[in-house]
Amino acid sequence: MSDARGTDGDDEWAISLDDLEEGEASGYEPAPIEPGNPTVEGVGFVLLGAVLTLVILFGGF
Image 1 (cartoon, rainbow, N blue to C red):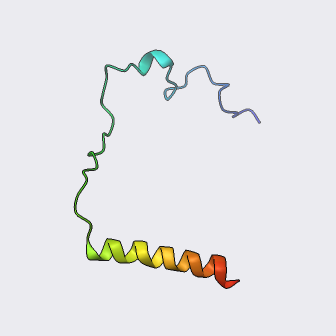
Image 2: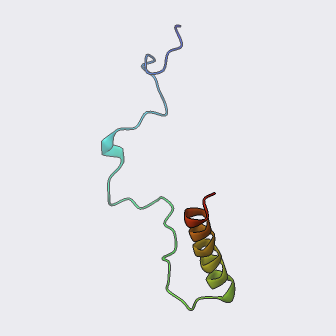
């Protein structure tokens, strides 16, 4: 195969570690996760997961 990756000397997508400096923050930065009050739906899913886990572990499924 003559089209093997990395054999071409003119690779326009090639980058080096010098291109990835810490000072450049051009990438995506997600919003921080803030603590909040639990919702009824969230508490219900946690309880449902705990109950299903206990049923599977001790129910013999």
